[in-house]
Length: 371
Image (tube, rainbow, N blue to C red; front, side, top):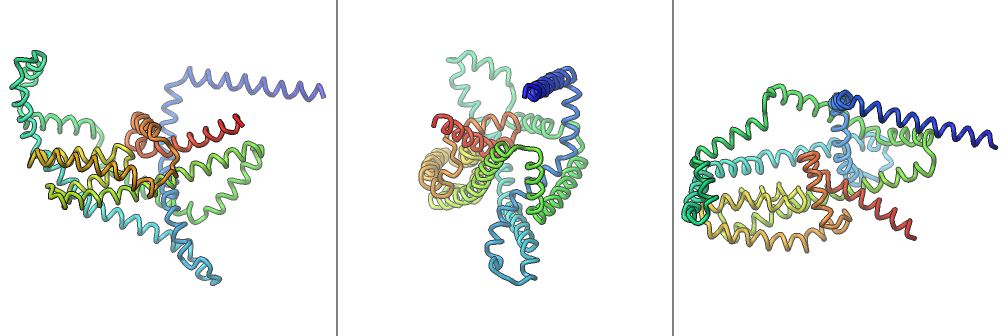
C-alpha cells in the first residue's frame, strides 16, 4: 500500500517538474514559440475553416434530413439522403450569398458612394457652424487653424489612410488567390466531415474512452453540448432577426417616405447580424445619407430607428430567439467589446456564443456547488 502511494507521489512530482520546466522553456523562447504557433495556425487554417463551415452546413443538413423521406425504407433513397441534403444545404448558402451579392452588396456600395459624394458638404457645413463659436472656445479655434483643409481634402486623406491600413505592402492578387485556395480546401474538408460525421463521432468517443476518465469525459460532453446549443441558436436566431429587421426598416422607411429606403433598409438588416449594436451602425450610415438631403427627416429617421429597436428588442427578439442564448444584455455587450478587441470582426460575431457557453457552464457549476 505504501509502495503504491509513493509511486503516485513520484508520478505527481514528475508531472509538476515537467510542467514547470515546460512553462519556463516557453517563457525563455517566447518569440520562437509565438512564431511557431502562427506558422502552425496558417497551415491548419483551411481545416479549421472547413470545420466551421461544416458546423454551419450541418444545421441545414439536419433540417433537410427531417424532410427528405425520413421514414423511407428504400435502400437507394437512404444511400443518397446524406449527399442530397449536403447539396441542398450548399445550394441554400449559395442562394443566400447571391442575394447579398445581387441586392444587398450593390445597395451598400451605392450608399458608400453617396456618403463619399456628400461627405465634403457635411464637413464644410460643420466647419462653418464651428466657426460661428470660434471666439467663445479658444481650443476650437486652435484646432481649426491646425486642420486647415476642406471636405474634399479630408475625404482624400481618409481614403488614403484606409487604403494603407487595409492593404499595406501585401500583394492584392496574392492575398485573393490565397483566400480562394483556402476556401476551396475548406469546402472540400467540410463535405468530407459531413459525409462521415457518425464515423468521426465514434472515433472521437473511442479516443476519449481510451485516454480520459468517465467523469472528465462526461464533463467534456456536457460542455460540448452546451456550446453546440449556444452556437446553433445564436446563428439561426441572428439570421432570422437580421432578415426581419431589414424588412421592417425598409417597409417603415417607405411608409414614412424617408430617402434611400431601399438602400438603408438592407444595410440595417446586414449590420443587424452583429448583436445589440449592429442595427445602430446601419442607422448611423442611414443618418449620414439622409442628412445630406434633409436634416429634419434625418432626425425623424433616428426617432424611427429608436422606436423600431425597442419593438424589436422587446417583442420580436424574444419571440424569434427567446432566452435560447441565455446571456444577459450586459454580458452580451462585454462579449462584443472583448471579442472585437481580440479578434476583430470574427471576435464580434463569435464573442456572444462563446460567452454564452462559458456563462451557462459557470452558472451550472455554481448552482451544483451551492446545492
